[in-house]
Image 1 (cartoon, one colour):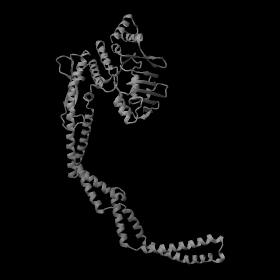
Image 2 (cartoon, rainbow, N blue to C red):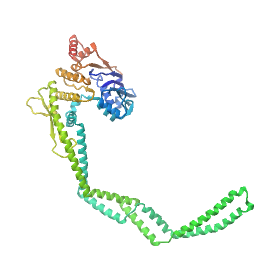
Image 3 (spheres, rainbow, N blue to C red):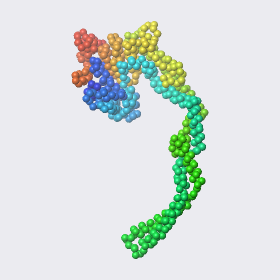
Image 4 (cartoon, helix red, strand yellow):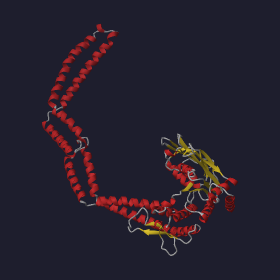
Length: 550
């Protein structure tokens, strides 16, 4: 459960730290005092998106941390252990910082974490029901999600969705390969012609560089032979002169320490000239005049460059172009074996989907009946005992795999005896919709595994005996889970095991204050909620009576 919440420079809160306990805790205060700020801050710790505008004016950053006791939360312990984040104390601290520049940081037990990790862990720690939940209740996706959650079918709906998505991908691929449109036929005809032309030329990888090197050699053969012979002759004549110089350098009369380096250089030069002459002779012997080979090489180069210009690619990339065109043609024509394999995969995936969808439908049918009964039981205590609530399963006319399953879900209600149940958005009024939403949320919370459940003004639009019934529902939940309830209803606030008051102070600089109420202070707050700012003896007596009855 949530043990402690610390908030620094968030909205109108400069600093707040509150210890929380088990049971039901009510949070009250005037409209605009900041009752929901504490819950908004907690939402940031469990993965909500950050907004730098939430930082208190004048502050450079906001810092929020929430400490949870996970010593009896097995699922959270497993999650933390798998990531080596479990503390021996049995506590888990989620921390979030947001700077005025918009940078955000999240931490789990002091270790940097992603928002996705915080959200995943947060689902195991806290379940938040907002005051606007009844608005989304009008949408079928929300209704379907509520039923699937109640049916504990989350894993099944994931499998059904993944299989339907896989079937659609396979079906699109099969249609693309087997399609016979005029456009694909024309493209296949063009590809066939281009591939035949390229295969006739048959460009090879690395061929161009070899051809260009051979062309340079053959086109300059006469010059190369003449130049090589002249170099060889020059080396020979220079060798004779250099040999005489070496003989002079090696004369005994020239022998001294000062001429050692000179003699070595002269000898080395003579060796180099000998090697150059021998290398030139060998090179000249390897070059031949080959007009036919030159003509053949030029024709091959011309064919490659003409083909490259035609396809607007470089001559070096012609082999790669051929492979690409062949792959495209194969993908368009598709061998019969490939198409048969795809057809088999399509059928196999459809069979798997139908099997999972049937299981999901069975879960939904069982849960729909039970959920409808439980909702009507709850609505009876909310002054809607004569209404009829049904969960309708509407089969899809298209039998192809659908990520939603084999049917859609719609909540129907009849608020008048004898009337046929109809969709919520056409039958229920705003107040009735709020009570239906509250009944669903309480039932969902009743089956939830989160140890902390938060209700943010879900009792809006109700009062009197209905509000008292709501308070009793939340109080019952508080006997087995930690419940935090932001409320404007004195009947609800009186049912709480603990009571927190939020007030706003200041004129130029506004601050929200949080106070724990007990004894006389709590009686006065319940009285204020009953009768306004002016408290009378009768109001206070009524408030005390409500607290005594709770």
